[in-house]
Length: 560
Image (cartoon, rainbow, N blue to C red; front, side, top):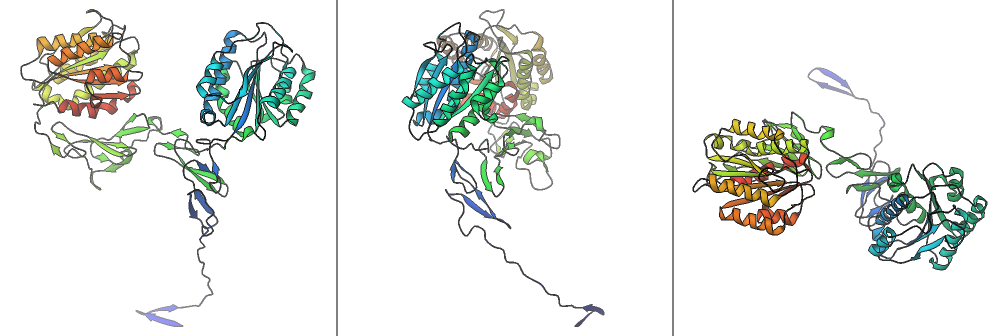
C-alpha cells in the first residue's frame, strides 16, 4: 500500500501485533483487616492499617498485642556478683519488663524470678510465676536483694528448679521462656546437660545472658541450644546495650507478637518479597528509623536549618520559599506577604511577619504598626546553663529584638536585662539598664554578657523582683511593660515567692511571657505567664529559634 503526502512516499507494512490487557491482581481481595490492595504488573501489595503487618496484613504487631507467655528470669547471685552489679541487673530486668507493659496490663504475661547460688536453700523463688500488676511487679524487682554474699554458681541446679516452678505455676498451652543471667562458669557443669534436656522436654525455651569476661561461652550455648539465643554483655553496666536484642529474642521465642519493622508511625506495606515502609514526614531509611534533621543538611538555597522536637524547619532567605526552600519567588507565588520570612515545615509552612503585620500569611495590617514598649528580659544564669547554652540564649534575645530595630533606634522601645541565679544583689543583677540606646549598641551589650554572668541557683522569683525594681524606677508613663522570663530549670525559691513577685510585676502593668527550655516546671511557667498561651517551651537551647515568631507576636500585641 502506498500513501502520498506532500510528495513524500510512505510504505505501510502490515505487521502482526498483540495487545496486552492489564489484569487486576486485587480482584480476589487478598488484603485483609481494612488494608488497601495495590495491583502491580506482577502480583500486588497490601498497604496495612493500624497495628496489622504481614504479606496480607493478617498479623497483629506488638503495639497493641495481648498475646500470652510465661517468662521466668533466673538470676546469678553468686559471690562474684557485687551489690552494685546485682542492682544493675535488677534495673535491667525492670527495663525488659517495661517493654511488655501492655501485655502485663492485659494479663497476657506471667513473670517470675529465681535467684541462684548454692544448690540448696540459697537458690530460691523470689517472685513466683503469676499474674501481676505492672507497677507492683516493677517495685518488687527494684527492691530485690541478694540472698547470699558468698557462694558458687550452680547453674544446672537453678535450671532444674526453674523447670519445676514452670510445672507448678505455669499455664498449659502457653509459651514458656527462661532467661538465665550469669557472670561466671557453672560450678555444676555436669548438671547442665540433663537440666537443659528436661527443660526442652517441658517445652521451655532458654535465653542465656553472659556478663563480663569469666563466663563460659560453650556453657551459654549448651544452655540456650541456639546461638541466636545467646546474648553477651561486657559488664553489668553494659547490660542496657543488650535490651533491643533481648526484647526481640523474647518476642521470637514466645511468639508474644511479631515486631513491626516500620518505625515512627510509618505505614507497613506487605510485598511478595517481604515488606516496605512508607515513612511519615521527617523520617527516612528502610524502616523509617532515621530522623531527618539538620545533620542531613536538608535546607536548600542558603536556608537556615533548625532542629525541632519532631524534625526540623528551614528558614528561607529572601526570594526563596517552599519545602526546604526549594522554590523561588518567580513561580509559584510566595504565600508570605509584606516582607515576611518563609519557614518550611514538615506539615507545610509558617510566616514570620515583619512588625506591623499579622495573620497566617502576614496580610493583616495591625492597628498600631509602631511598637512602643519597655521590655525587661529575666535570664537564667544558673549552674545548669553551660557557656554554649548561655551564648545561644543571648543570640536568641538579639534575634527576638531584630524586627524592632527601628523602634529601638527611635526610642519607642527600650530594653533591659536581669541575669538571675542566687538570691542576692551580687548574683542576681541588672545587666542592662532600661534606657535609651541604639539597636546596634543594645545588640553589642547583649552579646557581651557572655563573660559577665555568675552561676548559681535558680531563684526565678527573685529575678522577677529585681526586674520589677528596674521597671518601677525606669519605666515611662503610658508605655506598655513586657517582662520575658527565660529559664531551663525548676525555681529554687518557693511557689509563694514566685506568686508574690509576679503579683508585684502586675501592679506595674507588666505583661508576662515565660520561655522554658528542657526540664522545667510547667506549673511554674504558667504561674509566671498568667496563662498557657503565654508559655513557650522547647526541649533544648538549639531549638530556641523556633520560638522567635510566637514571642515576637506577643510583643507586637502590646503595641500602643
